[in-house]
Image (cartoon, rainbow, N blue to C red; front, side):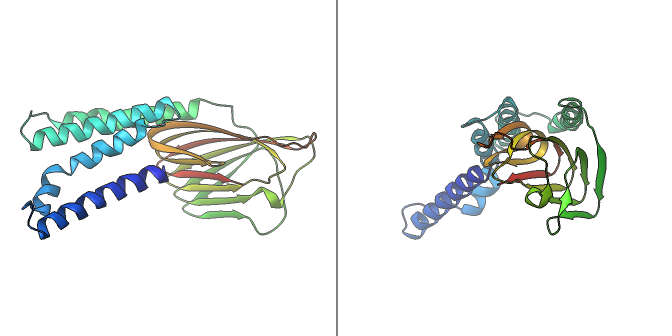
Length: 234
């Protein structure tokens, strides 16, 4: 996701800088302000196209097509190519987002273990030793930070962590000698798991870390994100 934003931002800045240079040298006489006001939806189309390149899931394909469609409708309306009512699009958009968010909570393993919630607050397990158990973590307009390097884990034991985010964020650091299986879905947000990343209107992502130690502990992390983010890093 970060790489896509860098390419898009860099390309737009290079184009505008080149156009400004051509204007200053007298080769062209195009108003940059007019160009931006008339053709800014092209940035949406390019952003949507970036989701279609090297996509990792069907969700990114859907995200890209939706963004391209929105950008095309806005651009076409501004240029009088056609006249489509965007209010009809929004009438379908937000209910669809809620439906996708609901599906993401229905999919995946059932929640087990105790629950910890950060509601407009924070949970920090990065400074002291703590016991790792099957658990459900909820970040609702709040943040959660977990460092599994400081967690007590039994050799060969398997743990399930369910990470649920609504307009918040969860950051998890995993030890290099543990086997970790990550699976997640995101609606209007981002996922970054063991070096893999995705995001957008709706997307899914799987990432694994396999330990070479025979009796290494196994951690399964399932993430459900709505308008927020989850980061799982080494």
